[in-house]
Image (cartoon, rainbow, N blue to C red):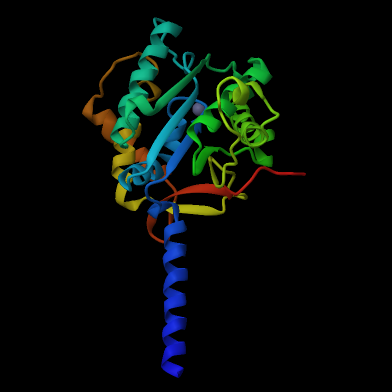
Length: 274
Ligand SMILES: [Zn+2]
């Protein structure tokens, strides 16, 4: 009897342990993941290691890019149209390196820096439709935490708030009811969310990216136009010396915990009701 109880207890422990293991983002498998990013690079800088792990573990990862990033160049000979094209192809290569196929990248197409001035109902409606269509098991986005209201890039602020507003709208069908009536999109409740770029005070979840850290730095370096010298005078490739310098910088800046590289998130299971 006693050995039977011990066995049951051990079985229970192993089930609990397996469940806890499963719930780590590092080991999630065969799920649908939706990532909202303000610009074509924040997903890679903020959560690239995690995205690589999710792809490696046979999850279906979709990326939604709010803006075309057509302003951030100091090059006097650059045009917005050309920069948008460059940023798009860099993002496809960069995400491709992390294992995300380019057909899984959705472009909302807003101009860089202008997200805050986009028609609000339209912006939320579009993000809501994407959530209802993709129906993610896990959603990643920029942190809409309190600290963010004080200072941040306009598009980051807006993307953070808009995404969480869309998460809320997605679960009540009376928000944008035409999506159900005309498009057949049913309401959907996002069960789990991880917010990247959290403030240090609000980070509560750390993903160990040690095994994919170099892959992440390589992928980030594919965003050539974001770095020196291409940000000042555009060139499509790297001088090997500049590339090594940029990657060293990334290695220095990537947070570490208990001796390994991590990505920090704020974890949540629903929007704030109050
Ligand atoms: Zn950004």
